Structure formats: structure tokens, C-alpha cells
Image (cartoon, rainbow, N blue to C red; front, side, top):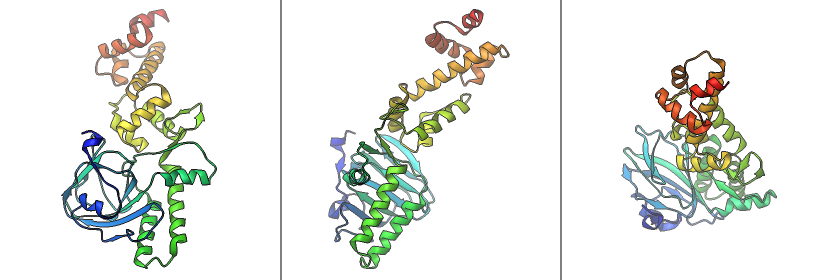
Length: 298
């Protein structure tokens, strides 16, 4: 479904009634928090319509569900295991829908995208920033901020706007540090994955070349959706994840061929190729000769 066909929802006021059957138990709809919106829900088993929002969202779970939430994000399905402290980051304007089979209790913190930009300006950092659509990690700090803001609402805003602003600044700083990509002009990043994330993924690939690596598996390491991860990975390496894995396997195959301890069939099996001809095909495409011819040339 194209974005134009999905329901557009502003995460403020009455429009949220189009998403959920029950009204919020608690919200700051009547209080201006400067682009930050909090809603606390208890919803029955329900299936949401596909929609998108101009705000970023953090769905913060505070109850363990017996069955996973089935979520569709940008056309792909995910199973999210909800328990107290787990968080789902849903980026602005991304198409999403979900359904759950048991009563679901959660906080939703939404905020205008410019809040992140404003935080960058305040810290003299001028590089553009992109929030990552993180899949269900446990984040005690975000959970604590959500609970603190709920307590603030229940107290009748006893702490005042400055207290809320302090929580908002802490939240934005945390998201920038752990949930975003900034377009630094560094040799190791070209509008792609951070150095740390890229190293984690690459190390995992090299340690598991004998396994049937999937895009979903690698994206999970980076804590983002497969489509988003694939795009950032290619920006970082110049290769798609699949192409990169194949190239790593070919490079390792050349090393093993030079060592002369394994047959070509054994090398193919040890590197996760389904059969020797599969290795032969990719080896010839990459190197320009078959493994057998390569071995003779050494």
C-alpha cells in the first residue's frame, strides 16, 4: 500500500481515536510540552489500520503480553515480544500497522522531528540526523523517562514546564546517541551505519560465514528494519548485504584454497554454499576463473 493510501494521523488530540478503540487513560493533550506528546493506554485485543504519522513515536511497553504483537512496518512483518521496559521506535511518515491478541498496556511518547534538530543545534552539532526504526530493545532509561512523565501528569504538573523540558532534553540526547545516524564526513561512514554498528555486523558476518545468514538476522544486530538496514549498509560498504557476504565467502575460499587442506567441495560446505557448483559460480564471477583454475595458478 502506498503512503498516500494509508491513514495519516497526527498524534495529538482526537485524531488518535482513529487508531485505538479506547481513549487514553492519561495524556498531556491539555498541556503544552513543546512538541512532546504522552499518551498512556490500555487497549483490548485489536487490529490497527495501516497509517503514518508526521511525528516520531516511542511505544513503551509496561506489561508482558502472552503472545507477540504482530507489526507491519514499511510492508514487512515483525513479531514484537512486549515486556516491561521494551521500546519500539517508529519513525515519522513510516507506514505501520499492528495487531495483538491480549490486552495491551503501554505508553506512547511522540515528538516532532525538529526536536532532534533543535538538540543538535544546542550542542553545536550541525550534521543532519536520521532516527533509526529500532526493533524492540529493552531500554531502562526511556522506560524511566516515560514513567517519570506519567507521574508528572498525575501530580498535576507539579514540577512545571522546566522539569518536563529537562526530561525532553535527556530523551533527545539519548536518542541521538543510541538511536540515530548522523551524516558525518568520515571515511568509514558515507550517510550509512555508524562505525560501531558496522563493525558489529561485519564481525558477525565473518564469524558466521558457514551459516545461512539472512537480512533479518543482520538487521536485528543493528536494531533496525531490514529495508532500512540494507540501505544504510550499502551506503557504508558500497555493496548490498548479500553481495558483501558473498564477497567475504569468496575471499575466505581463496585463503582456504591456498592452504590446500580442504577439497573444493569441503570449502564450499564450510562457507555456507549449498553445493560446490554454487561456489564455482560465484567464484568465477568474482575472480574470473574457477576455484580449480585459481588453485593451479598459485
